[in-house]
Image 1 (tube, rainbow, N blue to C red):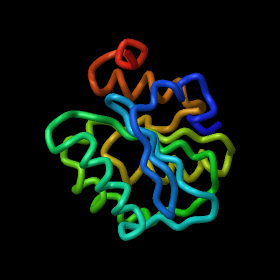
Image 2: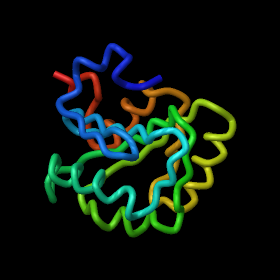
Image 3: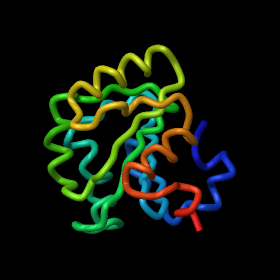
Image 4: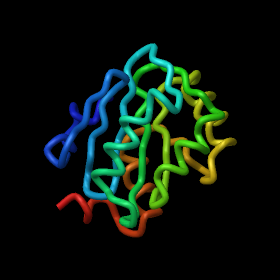
Length: 142
């Protein structure tokens, strides 16, 4: 389910849309929802990375959640380069809703510096990523 269709929608601070998807900004977490059928590589994701960097700056710790509500492909080899553009990224997670997206998330996690990045629902991912940043998500929404 898209984050803007949950009770969390009222807690979204800002949003940024690109040709490839939308990023929803919470206080310490950016939730990215890429469009159906897109291919995400470094060139495609660069506008998203720049909006995240603009929102969180270069020193404030934050997390990213890829909410895979749509099916899309990702250039695994670009993950490390994308990560280098966000030096203060402290936690990362992927919400998977189907067996296919879970399999893709597991493959993606093998190229990631974090472990246990796959989640079955948005709420679990938000709470876990916020804890990895350093506090409880429910306390950080207000």
